[in-house]
Image 1 (tube, rainbow, N blue to C red):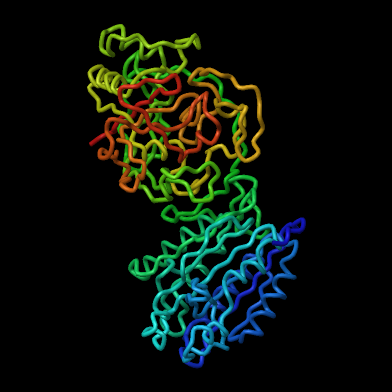
Image 2 (cartoon, rainbow, N blue to C red):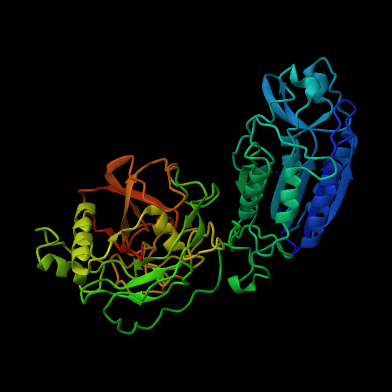
Amino acid sequence: MPSAAPPIPGRLVALVIANGAYPDAPLQNPVVDAGLVGESLKRIGFAVTVKTNVDLDGFEQALSDFAAASKGADVALFYFAGHGFSVAADGIQQNLLMTTSSNFQAKSEIALRQGGEPLDHVEETVIGRARATLIFIDACRNVPVLAHRGIGSRGFAPIDPSSAEGAYVVLSTRQGKTAEDGEAGQGSPFARAVAATLPTAGLRIEDAAARIRKKVREETSDAQDPDVVRSDLPEGGVVLMGGGSPPPAVASLEAPPPADSPSAVPQTPAPVPAAEPPAAAVSVGPPAKIAANDAGGEVFKECDECPEMVVVPAGKSMLGSPPGESGRQTFESAPHLVEIAKPFAVGRYAVTFAQWDACYAEGACGHRRLGDLDFGRGKRPAIFATWAEAQLYVQWLKRQTGQPYRLLSEAEWEYAARGCRNLKCAYAPFWFGAIKPELAVYDSRRSYDGSPKADPRLKTEPVDSGPANPFGLYNMLGNVRQWTQDCWNPAPSAVASNGAPVLSGDCSARATRGGSWADEPSKLRAASRDYESVDEGSERIGFRVARDLGP
């Protein structure tokens, strides 16, 4: 694979090939698709070449010209609309993009292959020329004349997802499935979704793919499900704006997406605020009545020894980690939408030793005094509490206040940790952008995606150290991992879309979140998961509490 030349900032190139005039199986919409997608890309700032109804020679010439034009560009985008399917070649299924040279009446698969361009050859030709390459394939249409041979209805064969540096490949439907052409003159569901989604300022390609998938599934009643089959982008990713690179800050977004759309800011968002000054004393008493659309941020505590609580607003968020996220583990959730229907309160800080010791002094938190490893007590997070002991503390709070205190669910915890109520922060590993030792407490001898290293602190810090996240919560990422209410599930497919805890699975162990002072930085990602036995405590694990508000 050729290595990419130094990128020319802002140079965006695209090739759109649309074939519909097949002699034996014409399609109504590819040329329409080409117009929709081409115009959409021009709005973003791409230099677009459109080729329609090309034979094999024309396809290969267009591909060669595009490879030359892509060299040194920031982003190169290839889009194909037309027939495509897999055909056996030497015992191996080969995925083909069919040209108008195709003879679907051919008696042999060798003859059928002669009219198609192998998808892997397209990838080899175009990937590696630009800083990043995006490939969209709207193919896998059914070919009735081939159905009796089991070819026209089976779609693409599985694609090897092995590394292809700088590439992101999206298929209009899952491998082995077919895609709809759409009503004549209207464009295919996939082309319409792509054309409507890409010209969104500040939209990262991962989030564009998620939005496209949602639109297509809705239009086809889940019959067609677009799929990302290759995701290996360069550092900094791709944001589909005029310059093709992430904007420097959230405030620079020209048109934030609507609250119900799964778009996101880049993984390096706004500059991090400086650490806040010590908070003023919080008056003791219950919170004011909180409305369903409350913006959140109110702080209260309900007894002198009680934790300070922050009102977290209702909202929607994409939780989980995309396949390309550095440090991702197999037991992390795939990106999925969770809706928190009403505000709830979350501990402003992890429960401190001072708060735990007040419960312990009353004999309500068991008979085992928690150790502190000589880190200090007071405002440092309580460590070594088991999940069962954390439940004792929650019950004590309930008795002290008469209010429904509890632990957070995993979904609530991640929503609160991301600090984003309207999907703008989907998939960012850390709410503060690139991780640095001054922003979180972790083992800074280790690096994450090139983050700076430093001598580690090798102990916990006071719970109010560092900056608060956008919801006003401190140290959601780092310092101590935090117990959640959820039973451990290594394949968390049962995550409730309403944020409720998962109470099935291995309930002798519970999920922990957030990473700790002793963990490498990848463990601090918002989507990172871990677990511990309910009867085991750890110097890395603490907890924070939640409280329901209103009926």
